[in-house]
Image 1 (cartoon, rainbow, N blue to C red):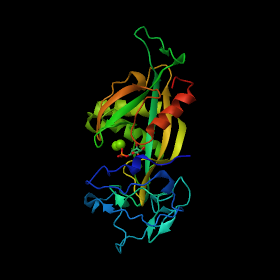
Image 2 (image 1 turned 30 degrees about the horizontal axis):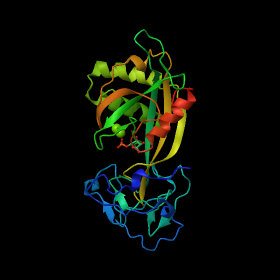
Image 3 (image 1 turned 90 degrees about the vertical axis):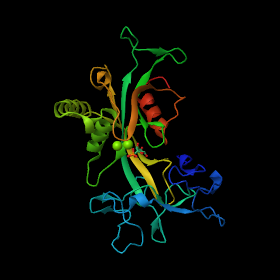
Image 4 (image 1 turned 180 degrees about the vertical axis):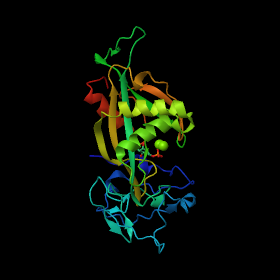
Length: 279
Ligand code: RP5
Ligand code: MG
Ligand code: MG
């Protein structure tokens, strides 16, 4: 079972905010922790953003927690979350910070992560084997995030009413193929390739993400889907180009030394297991 760690580091990644730091044993809400007194942070940059909720207490804000609220999905993959003093409570427990931080939604913020894989090939076109495990080496398409500089999956938020399958394609196009800055003919080619390739996919994770932006009242959730180019003839040979919230993109070898954003290493490990690859 997941225990959140990345959202309990000393500093919140934005706004120079310090989290309340405490031991793992005090993470669950049902453990008594009378000295727990974290700060509250609600990023001012969220005010009047069409994709963000109003503040709690705003008379125009009447969210339907744990439900599909119009076209905004406030249902958690982690099950029913509790509401305390009008605020949703992080299903994994305390994070050391109240408020919603920089996240747009109170409660669950839904994302989708494409885990796009291919085999590592040597110069003569043969699959490379790792000598320590004798297994083929899998590679995944990794982006470097502009916000934290960490390497990550090219994922992003599900827009209200958007099908997750569409989010997966859109985010891959934006972050790994720079679709937002492609010329129309180039864009059409990329979209066609991605929609053909993303027709098959295998869901490897659905649930809470241990994202550094999480707070006591707002958190990330995702659906991670593996799309595998077994013979390297489709996306595997396509020219990658970073775009939108990614500053770099590359094919990264998968093994247990990976250090990725949030709990993305776990998603990538699951893909390696699925294909019987080296880890
Ligand atoms: C992570 O944040 C998700 O797993 C996904 O990769 C990402 C979505 O947020 P943005 O990339 O849009 O910031 O929690
Ligand atoms: Mg994005
Ligand atoms: Mg993103």
